Image 1 (tube, helix red, strand yellow):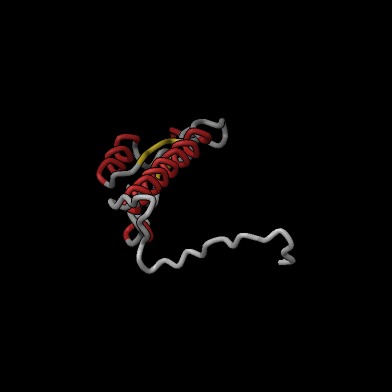
Image 2 (tube, rainbow, N blue to C red):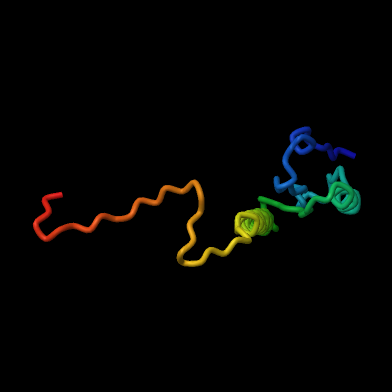
Length: 115
């Protein structure tokens, strides 16, 4: 079997999207890895798997769209998680102030001010 795991995936962040792409699926007569072997490897490594052919445009767009959708899902999930964790449990009334914040009050201009 010719499937190899890239060392960059071993040391990468869990949010990195990796997809196993079997190319040249139109050349079935010279196949080195069966679809079943590739599918099993992808499942074992928790990867998406798709076979493509640039020659007849089989699944090329689908491969890119799958990766982009997964990136979007992960980024949206991170954004949602960060915005939830940044919210405070403290509710301030209109007359309360947070300590340590120096909020400058806007100056009222007089009618003849040159400022």
